[in-house]
Length: 251
Length: 251
DNA sequence: GAAATAGTGTCTATCAGACAATATATC
DNA sequence: GATATATTGTCTGATAGACACTATTTC
Image (cartoon, chains in turn purple, brown, green, orange):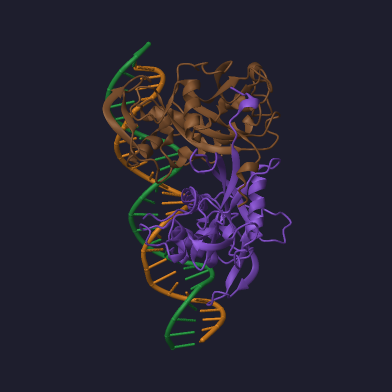
């Protein structure tokens, strides 16, 4: 290994965040409008530099809190809690026109929030459906506010994050990260439907999730916030891996 | 985003490689002995600096070729071909005592090679069973050549790479990356057995893999290199995702 | 009562795992 | 023939998906 600490090529290291939530039956991501060049005025993923004494996951959690007020895995949290994990690292030499920047992308899954906190140093921020941000269907899905692709390689990062979320809720209990602390089976099902973009049979879904040990723990309470017959309330159980998995329907 | 190109904290960026193969019925990883401080004389994963004009995957492929002679995904390769993918990025501020180094670890899966090429700048190199390198069973599995943990955080990186390989062969055709271009169902089964450390029923395995469309393509030839009745030879089919998956037996 | 959502039960095709039986090589 | 591996077939229990039916709320 050619370690020569005095002569290594200098890199900047950033973290970028794919923050996903489910709003109004759609999978949405947090986007911020860039206030400076390059890509000034374009939408981008939130992110920022890793500080000199900071771990990558610490930097990601800090950016998440700055942008959304969410805490990552806060064990004693009064604050809303989000799931946070490393996604992938992007280091094309040309990805930032100014200098060599390696970005360690992270994926955050959060329950529906009232409205984006345009905090930190973001010029403005919004939740937008991932189809809108990515311009699926040859750009037809982009609306007036989203005519252009995301800045840098953030389209690719967002697409990778969405695919990670879509596949990971199959074999883990991660879908509960999109739900408030207490939720019904129907609310959990609507999360799966929004993330996958499919319709699921409510009866089979109910049988499946309540029959998987450790997935859901009934709180004893009920709610009727969806209308109709009152539904039992659950919290996420300790199980993180679902066996057997909840498989995406074939297309 | 607080981009200030003139005042970003400087990082060194490296790639480290988890190169896995199956030798003598055991899952083995490539380790190199460090010739310099820190961790001089200790075993480590192969790796090196990312060059100033080089993509991360390019750097990983270059290191792989330097260390093993393997080419990553060579489309017109006479050379042996390996599967190469990004694994995860490790950036604890203390992981290298000399300076801030962020390492983008990659995972390579290769067919059994004659012997490690002690090429590049590695002092020496060897294949060792991952249990030996990781010292499972409270260190009892480490032999005389492997009394100490790997250098830096390479124990963690190796463990993450092994777990990635173990889980990924469940739902993808990646196990064929451990096989030569032509292989039998029995050889493929012994790959699964070595990677997972379990025994699989040869009859159910055969029915499963030959019944999954696109997984295996018969070449028409047969071989008897395992003894017993001649077995059909196959090449890897185009399918990359296995549906339904090949599930690891419960423990 | 109509409509909506929650929850249970039933049927069927498919699949995983256990294992009998046959095929074809080497020793 | 003994032994080893390959390959096919059979049986059984679990599960996914389709869907009938009941329960309990709001309008």
